[in-house]
Image (tube, rainbow, N blue to C red):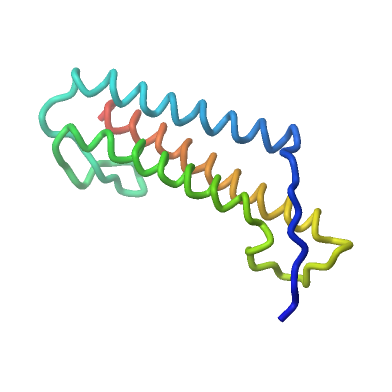
Length: 130
């Protein structure tokens, strides 16, 4: 088996910026859920068609589901980003390309986490508006 190099890479400014944006989006999702919760009726839309129309309803406490899920995904992906040498890559990882491969793999996780957090913000807002 090919032994990959294990590197301790500090965050780049771009990685730090994406992580900070993710934390900001999570805080916004939580704040919106907390603020809207007391103002919502007992039943709210919890599932939407592609067109944006609600097609499923649930209790108002469900507004916390997406911030919870997004926070869990953020933590799990942040922990996974600490071991980029364990990821699957399309090209073989060598001493020469390990740093670039690991940084790309780690950034992929950070961007994915940001997108999930932004989706949570949008979904909380949509649940409260409809």
